[in-house]
Amino acid sequence: MERRTLIKSIAIMGLGATLPLRTLLARSAAAANKRPYHRFQLGDLEMTVVTDGHIVMSPVQDHFAQDVPAAAVTKLLQDSFRSVKSVDLGMNMLLVRKEKEVILIDTGAGFGFGPDSGWLPLSLKDAGISTDEVTKIVITHAHPDHIGGLFSKDGQLVFPQAQVYMSATEHRFWMSDKPDFSKSKFSNKALLAKILVSTKQTLTALKDRLHFFDDKETLFGCVRLQAAPGHTPGHTLVRVFSGNEEIVHIADLIHSDVLLFPHPEWGFDGDTDFTLAATTRRTVLESLAKDRTMVFSYHLPWPGIGHVTKKDDGFAWIAETYAFPD
Ligand SMILES: [Zn+2]
Image (cartoon, rainbow, N blue to C red):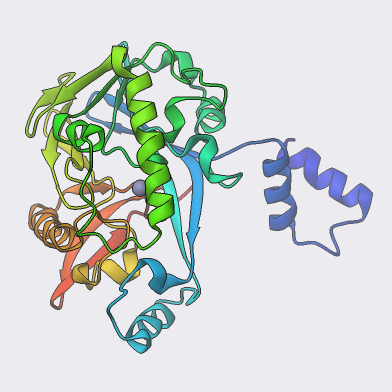
């Protein structure tokens, strides 16, 4: 519904007095399945960010900073004007258009995480992009919120024209007889066992279109891969470049702006190797801050674009802001 028509309808229905316009507009957008997208240019590349939805993690210390006194975590959340009960993870999806190639980085959660996620196909449609147009998919790592969108519930490929690229190390890890999670703080072993089965199934079903990359490899003349192990053994950052311009997709290097930038070592339970993930987090943040690189993050608040800066003994996230919605 056009904004003007909506305002007129509100007046006719006499609803304007009871509900704020903002709420009504939001409801109207949701009803029409309109989801936001953010488009920008990086050199010759057309970049589009769409949303796959979000995942609410609660209670906070089941997932973050498990070994830190509760009072310190609560204080930091309160000082940042955030909920002390949960951390809301965005699911930002980055798409790169380079001439005839449409490159999607990760595929979202698919149908496995309930109605608050798995929105990628709808979001692409709202951004004017068909799932048939996607020619390449780069997988940052094989967790279910990143590969879950490859297949529909009835087992069909969601992106039927796409070839899929992932780290050889990552593939070897998940397909091995007994992937090692002994250095993780993830406590739900039953869920972990399920994830293992479904990941093996997905990667097996995908094998005819799967290609493997190694650290520092360049793909499609616009994507440079950088190993960032810890979250998973083959967890990879995707550096998208055109001419002198670059944005670094940091995948799952970090899951909370207010907790983990100041304290990279507080850690996250989803990391396969908790200590290595913390070391990698600090090392990569250090270099992103030093190089003043533009960053894209999968899980930070929408649209996940910003810069990293040094602050005290840690870092801070300076989210990019936009003067108007596009
Ligand atoms: Zn993730």
